[in-house]
Amino acid sequence: MTSTPHGARARARIEITAAIKEEARRRLAEQGAAELSLRAVARTLGMASSAIYRYFPSRDDLLTALIIDAYDSLGETAEAALKASVGALAGERWTAVCEAIRGWALAHPHEYALIYGSPVPGYAAPATTVPAAARVGFALIDVVRDAHRAGELDVAPVPADLEAEAARMAADFVPDLPPAVAPACVAVWAQLLGLIGFEVFGQFTRIVEERDAFFRHAVDGLARTVGLRPADAS
Image 1 (cartoon, rainbow, N blue to C red):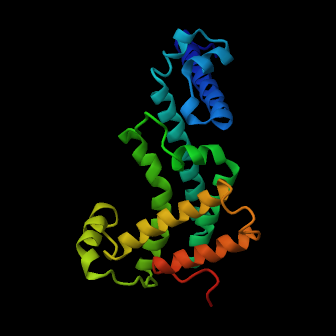
Image 2: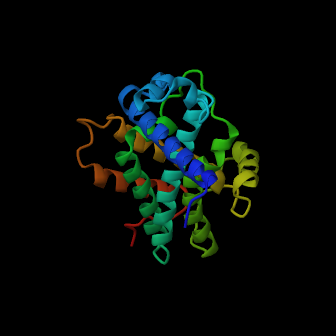
Image 3: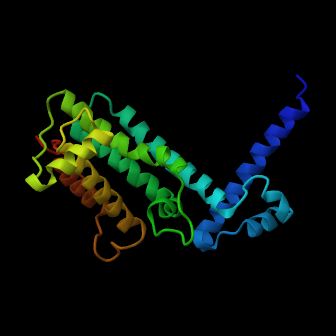
């Protein structure tokens, strides 16, 4: 079947967009997001500097595309672990998803830094990044939700001065779960990403040697915080 000019142009645009993003990722790894330049990317790819702006009108547009790609890649990894663990105990599923997130971060340290590291000077992520960013959190929440439906969730109550905030948070993103679950999930989400970030960015060097065992132990503690029975509990 003969391809149409329109189809050929569409394929060429997809290929060039992918090449631009791949070169941008290489530069992120070498120089960091703050040094990313559309002109430098174009020069490496042999493009006229004016041509690259037809694909990404600004550096920020390119950064946003890279950020969404990274969030989606991580989200897909977490969701795959969630799906693969269907039928296991809640604590085992929790550990599986957490380990998948860690594995992705260790395999993609520069992309992890892009989405969870220091803010890029002069860049503000637009609202279009939110759906992709939420995927990994919702994968973890799905484990908690399934445990709640099975009557296996035992989350500690929040103090009186946090009750109103817990109710607000729950209404915003987990309306089907007890209000106390919401702040617990937010705290655990932040702790998990920080724990992984410490490892990715070398903060555990000469401190934690048995990284796998240490991570599983920490994840068990996070499971307890959200009201789950840890994977190693009898």
